[in-house]
Image 1 (cartoon, rainbow, N blue to C red):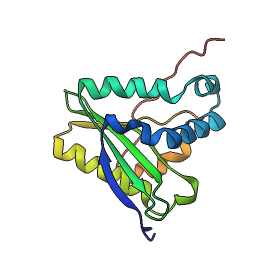
Image 2: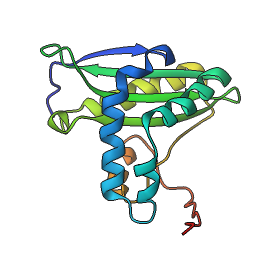
Image 3: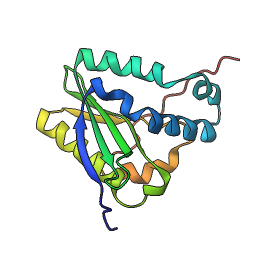
Image 4: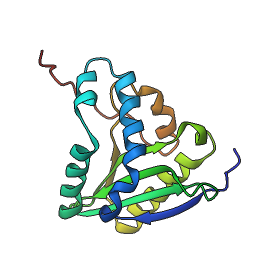
Length: 157
């Protein structure tokens, strides 16, 4: 798989709004594929997710890896990662625009995050996959992520 001419950079919470449109595309993807919790994605906006990220940034370490198209200057992918004071790492959110998928960008973003976790001494690294997005399992398996536990949540009518 040939790596496209993409530029990578790192930023922090202060620049979180740079991923808004990409995150909204991810949320639309989750909405379209959700089975039981579609209403969560229709009610959940970027500002809600941003508030969650703000708490993470205040309580531990927080990082955003960006992939940008040098021709258009626009961001085409991102990976948000956090590290708790107990050195628990989490891939919080990752997304690559449809036209840039299957070119190694997502893999590069995850690899960058994993290198950061290793450098910071992470004891454990996790990623959560939304119900309906199980097609992402093989992608994460390439990096050593496997299902450890399935969490069931009661749906309130």
